[in-house]
Amino acid sequence: MFNLNENNRFVMSRNPMDLRKGVDSLCGAIRSCHLDPLNGDVYVGAGEIPRAQLRHFKGAVQTDGYKVYDYFEKVPGVIPLSC
Image (tube, rainbow, N blue to C red):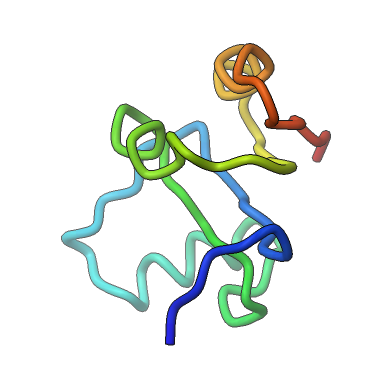
C-alpha cells in the first residue's frame, strides 16, 4: 500500500526525469545521486507535475535545485532542507 504522510522524506530533482525510460533507468538516476531508490523516500522530478503532486503537502522537502527551494520556501507549512 502506498501511503504519503509526515514521516515520508521527499527528494526532488531540479532536472526533469524521462519516465519513458522505465524503472531501471529511474533507479539508476536516483543511485547516481548516492541515494537508495528502495529506502521508502518519495522521489519527485522537476516541472509543473511535482507542484501538482505536492500541492497539499506540509512538511520538509529536500532537493538539489535552487529553483525548487525558491518555489517551496513561499509555501506555508513546507520546510526546504539542504542537500
